[in-house]
Length: 192
Ligand code: ADP
Image (cartoon, rainbow, N blue to C red; front, side, top):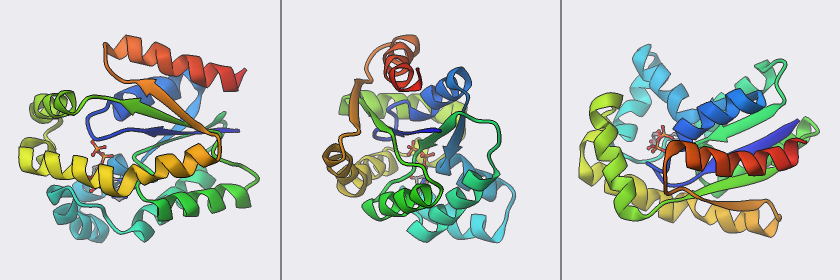
């Protein structure tokens, strides 16, 4: 099993690229953002609890997402590995993920980090607001907050992974296909 983190600020294209990578390399795509939005859409108790947090662009509590991910890992079948998208988002979540994988004789094999300039992030998020219908894409104050939360709470994971020798930066500027090709090079290198 090969396990990848796809990393980068909101608007860096993680979701778009994850879907393509998961298909090409037979990886289970685990997106905590998608899972949380599904809870909101289904109007579950958890969904009600997290919707106001997400609308502000803040992070939901670590234990919520850790539990969601643990459930998914054991239910995946016939996959070559996992692609974690939007998780982990804090160092605490990273430690929890490493333990989960370790308990199952697995590890994080690579962290692919999409680098995108700030103005381009905002442009992409504002641009997709209509299409995504996501309340957190509609408001530039919320967008700026999500980017700030990324810089403050999520980006420290990069040095954590760098120390483990699994950090792989990838240029996230350009067309979807160009970025996909760059990511695919790194995934293939480990997969073959
Ligand atoms: P984006 O990367 O574009 O911000 P996501 O779909 O990954 O979009 O996440 C949307 C929102 O869901 C986040 O702003 C946050 O509120 C919540 N969320 C998603 N994943 C996590 C996580 N691992 N930890 C805490 N909150 C999360």
